[in-house]
Length: 69
Image 1 (cartoon, rainbow, N blue to C red):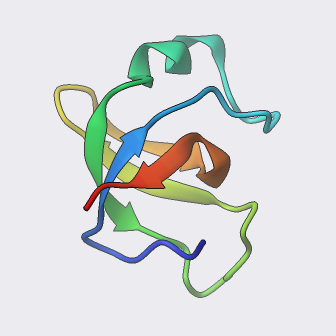
Image 2: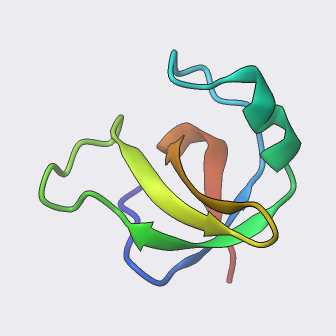
């Protein structure tokens, strides 16, 4: 899935990506908004920048995110 700027997402699972750090486990279940989807790279494995409610802005692996409707 390609994420778009402004989409509402949820961190719904731990990522299998090597960039996932242990502190990110606290983000599971949090909602946020895509700030920078890296559309210029267009790489499904690329990290996307997400502004998480109450946790600030972080770059997260795409396999940890799902779009909220």
